[in-house]
Image (cartoon, rainbow, N blue to C red; front, side):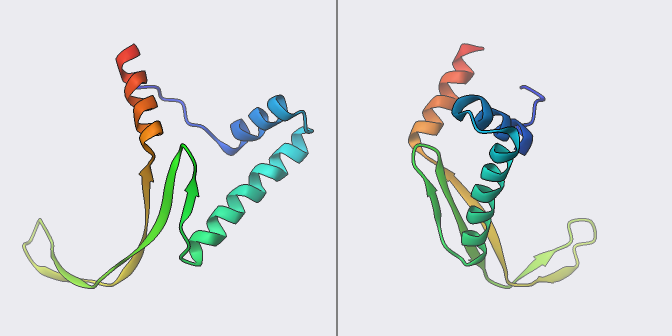
Amino acid sequence: MADKTLTRMDLSEAVHLAVGLSRNESADLVESVLQHVSDALVRGEQVKISSFGTFSVREKAARVGRNPKTGEEVPIHPRRVLTFRSSHLMKDRVAAGNRAD
């Protein structure tokens, strides 16, 4: 596995090289896109990016959990969690990358 992490700076540099915007404009564009995605998820909307995947927010109900160390029952409060489901195209690309190693 690669230890490299794709960062906002990497994304803005890729936009700069591919589109030709200045580095500042590219960084602003990446920030704007990420802000739109984030805002939509906070509102509970689904974010679907074609050929990549779908981000959505799921409501999880309250339940009783157990501390694995002590066995004590602990209440787990209801909460919202972020989920991601990759597209079949993305799954196929990742699988093809695994075979190339």
